[in-house]
Amino acid sequence: MSVLDRYVEGCAAAHQTLLGLVDSIEPESVREPSLLPHWSRAHVLSHLARNAEGLRRFFVAAEDGLVGEQYPGGRTKRDADIDDGAQRDFSVIVSEVRTSIWNLEGAWARASAEMWASKGRLLTGAEVTLEESVFRRWREVVVHTSDLGYGYAWKDWPKDYVRFELDRQLMAWRASQPMGVKDFPDQVRMLPDAERLAWLLQRTSIDGLGQGPGI
Image (cartoon, rainbow, N blue to C red):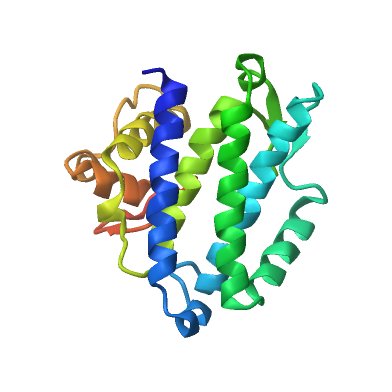
């Protein structure tokens, strides 16, 4: 199985986990705080829908040989769209999450081999291949599903996702450290994989180290 196939398979499974959790949420609890500062659960769900819509733009643009913008209008427009989506009725929020997932997975299924090497432009201005965008979506879904704080936690993150992400985070860690530093501090290295990753993504703390560097 190719790396792309593993990304798609993993992200599709994460989508189903998210949708199953959404179906279990009591409508009134969607306005309650999530585990992210200043965001309700409705904000997290709105963000996930907007994120899927933005990544789908990459594929629409690639069909015409163009570089798509994930968030036309920049951060201000993106944040306003999330806030607007979070104020909608619960049934509308759920419908947007579900529809955005279907549309994105449909774009994956229709993409040609050439399109996967095409690029899209992230909010930061960085460009990534469409293949890489699938992994980024996988990350968003797995991590933010746990951010809902509704029965799914970092301890439940899929092993395949954790394995892929830890490899990436170790490379990023090495690049940010003084020359010669090859691995995480002992307190981090000795943790179970999921907990080590949760620390790196600032979803848990370690005595003496606080939270990790984030992404």
